[in-house]
Length: 146
Figure 1 (cartoon, rainbow, N blue to C red):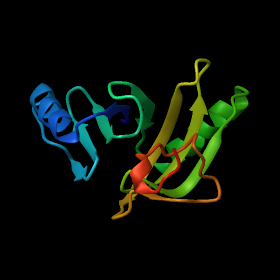
Figure 2: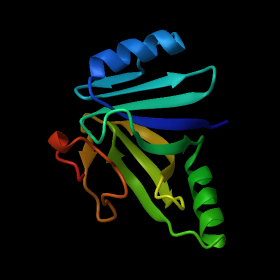
Figure 3: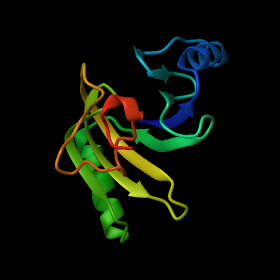
């Protein structure tokens, strides 16, 4: 079973981590400078916080964390069969993790990623030939595209 991902831009990562820890009753699963993510069991949610990556309080992007790379492939095929433009990133490094993912963009420019985390990484972002501003949306200070 996958879980929905909600990625938010925040102005103060410490205050946001404190708030969301209280709201969901769990601390972050991963914490780095300017970044945190929560793996909330109930409701099944991956909450991602980015400090300095856009207007504070705004939506960064949406996603679905899936159980396998086969699920990423199935999503890609479903999107392409439906005529949606996709951006596939295999073994990409973003958000301190190596992931297989596919991106689609909604009618109002909201970005969605369907992804499987392959492993943790010490690096926030590592460019790949497919990487673009459409993909990993990192704080300007991290060296990632903005």
